[in-house]
Image (cartoon, rainbow, N blue to C red; front, side, top):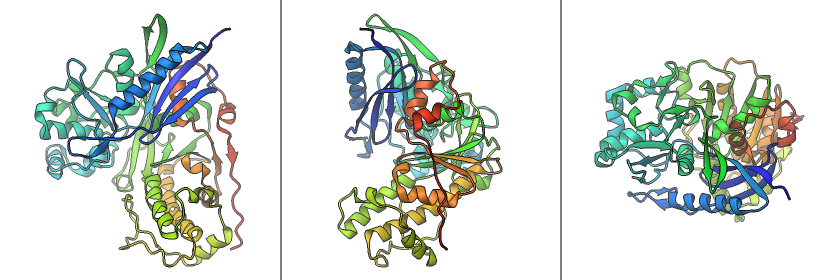
Length: 461
């Protein structure tokens, strides 16, 4: 029996760790999900357990290598961004994988802006809204001034996708998509590391930059395997669309963050863009992608848990709620803000506390929550579109299963072709494609993404 040739992709999200096998036509052969318990850093802040992650990756890899059905031809990695693994000269890990939500000391931030320019200037030049640890370059600055004894020992700092690749190759590299995702490291207009990176000697700790499509051929247990250098998950999720679609589009990638990605807008960011939480990501060729984001999935989870508590529902009940047009129209008559958002910094009217007394049922409160989140979603999509000629909007990720969200999207963007693309493969598929030289055509998304055109709502206003 001939073995099936496969590519392995480890797709590491903050919550779900996923493991995929793809055949040569990018058809999914195997998919495994797991959630790994967190550990804590030296300050007791919750963070990824790197050794648990490594063990999980090794176990899955070895199981597939030993499986008679498969011949592993390639491996690649897509992971969340803004997370560094710091290695000493011997390759030992020096620190925990600091969580990008960990607050950063104000005096370190003050020192940074005092030395290198105002918050707004840095944000504009690096296309990174300033958000502490989420700007992974600042983690290195923080280590240098807060933990100099550790900083002195660092030989290489690798972003998480490149670290996972290093586990298999022993080779330290950097690549565009990880450098370019709100890290504060890259000066987009100069197309090089920002001056501050050189001034602080940080460039010496970053591996040589290689193309995201680079791979390293290794021999493992007498088998020749091509190992990719890893890719940042948002850039990876965008890749299948860029490779198969010719006409301009915007991709709305939903999950913990809701990110509007516009690969057809290469204007430099303005001060106003930065204030609206716009940023740039990088395509695998180093070109910029204009994006705007907000912490929608995170906020949604916080608020839904509160709704379940308040209305005495089991968590998960919200997944069954269908869009109710009459309810929606009634709520829109009295347009007000009822929710106090906790994790979203976009400008909106602040209220002191969430008011659920106004809603008789869970469904009613839930529709109101979605209306308030949608207001911010409209704002961020409009910013990402900017002045580009876009007719198509693709939506992927967790919220494609949310009936209320999808109906509101089709309603508010009825002058566009709005399509839901249902692929739990998102960033994993991009990671598989980037290290293959196989050409794909227009029909690719149709085959792999169960694309559906959303019909605009006909509301009896």
